[in-house]
Amino acid sequence: MKRLLMITAILSLLLFVSCEKFGNNAIVGTWKATTMEMNVEGMSMSFELAEMGAEMSFTFRKDGTGEAYMSAEGERDSMDFEYETKGNILYLDSYGDVEEVPYSIKGNTMTMNLTEGFIEGYEAEVTLTLKKM
Image 1 (cartoon, rainbow, N blue to C red):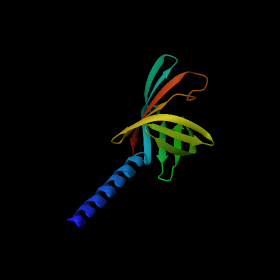
Image 2: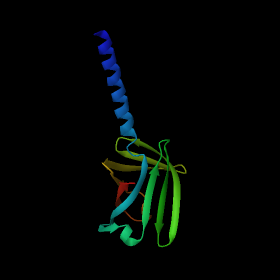
Image 3: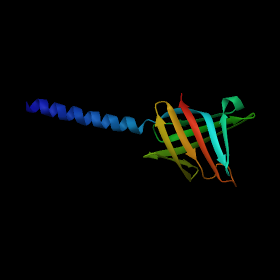
Image 4: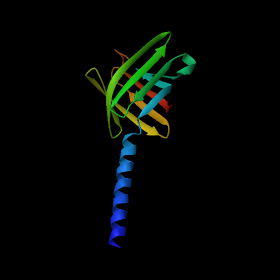
């Protein structure tokens, strides 16, 4: 009986650790932006990126590093970053500049809310909807 209780306790501990690890890794992978909703100084807009000929994606690696990629109007750009998640906040560190980005994940869909500095010189709120590749 003691042996059965010990095995049950060990299995419970492993299950708990596995669930915690899975939750932390939910963001790992490549996410492609599909829509962008913007509110710039009271004016709201919504775009399907593919219809505009634009691409945007974020790759999050298990080691806490990642890459952002964007292509629009023949121009392409990428940026490396380090990241950390705490609760529903994604901390993106690119060249020492850390941004706090509220985010949520439901299934294979992520929503990121960007505010500060997204459009320089304007008060803007931007919501990106991304799908896991």
